[in-house]
Length: 134
Image (cartoon, helix red, strand yellow):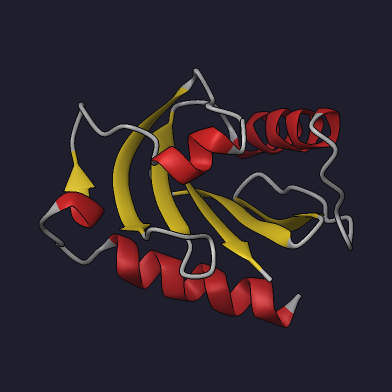
């Protein structure tokens, strides 16, 4: 759990950094990276992909995304938990979503995905997803 919380803090710091170039894409036209799509991972229709923080050529280096949604944290958490389970991913530890935050990790084979959802304003939530190979 300490790793997840540390990752959450790091992601929130990175999310505030203004990057440029392909890996720092911000805006309405951001597309999910090829490695994320190739894994057939969920693309939450009620969230907008606002930043591709890291989009490396292999999962050894990883993919890091930031999305925003108007849905509440518990709804977002439930969606990802259900979709990841359907895809055969497991959670090494089950965490409970609160009104303000949710952090978990999913594993499948030699890959893992770290997921956070946090309330950032009255009606907006930020979602961060980090996909990597172990």
